[in-house]
View 1 (cartoon, rainbow, N blue to C red):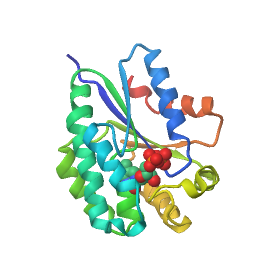
View 2: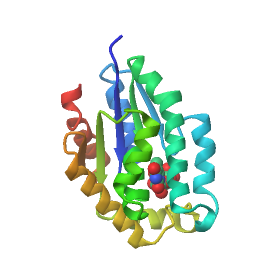
View 3: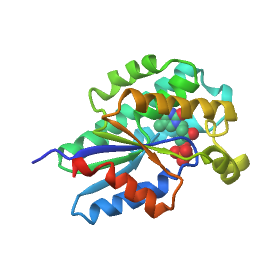
Length: 206
Ligand code: TYD
């Protein structure tokens, strides 16, 4: 059985990842690929339980290192229970967020440093880095998310604009450092145009 592929969608708040996850899944299925879509934090029973711990409650619920370790623990369960078995069974797994969200949010914006956060995650995911990461960039993303979520924003989405600016800067730095894996995609066009750009950024894997 040929190994499948592991693709991740990344980006800040409000860049349209959920819409694109569904659209990209459909586009790949139309090409005869067996696709599983998933999301983080979450994607397995254990990781969904940890998701609630991370996103509910006040800012001071977790220290920065505890928050990073919880994300890494959720990710480890997600890889063990869903990502690795599906890819080894020949499927394409597409995840809405993965390790680069931790590098950008907890590492870059949260002040722990990208390398420290990469190290705790590398221990957990045991080599299961994505084959390709599509980084959605939208100039008004954070603004759109604030308008959409308002007072409903979760523990992390509700952090100040400066935090989200640092997330965006960290994502761009990661893409510049790992150009083979991470491909920036302009997400400001129509949903159809963005899906076409995402597919083009996967063309060499198809
Ligand atoms: P979610 O509701 O899935 O948000 P979005 O629609 O923006 O993807 O909430 C996930 C939140 O958790 C989001 O603010 C990003 C944050 N997050 C991290 O800080 N680190 C991580 O490793 C992951 C996966 C998410």
